[in-house]
Image (cartoon, rainbow, N blue to C red; front, top):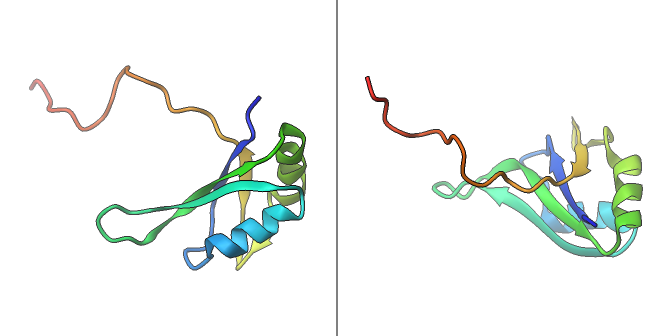
Length: 95
């Protein structure tokens, strides 16, 4: 059961409080975290929101995916875990 949502295409000025209140219309928000750049501290345009139940997470997807907030149409989907290992970027080329 995955209650964690990936929220993309966010306005760079949206606050966690505003985002949390949008999702609270569909149930209890367990956590809300807007991703920020490590070096500059600026928002990166996406966030993770965790709802209390899977039913609430699904309701939030149905209600908010594609909705315009602060001039941008949000994309809301179940958060998929990052793959471990495998091919990664940033390595040095052999040639």
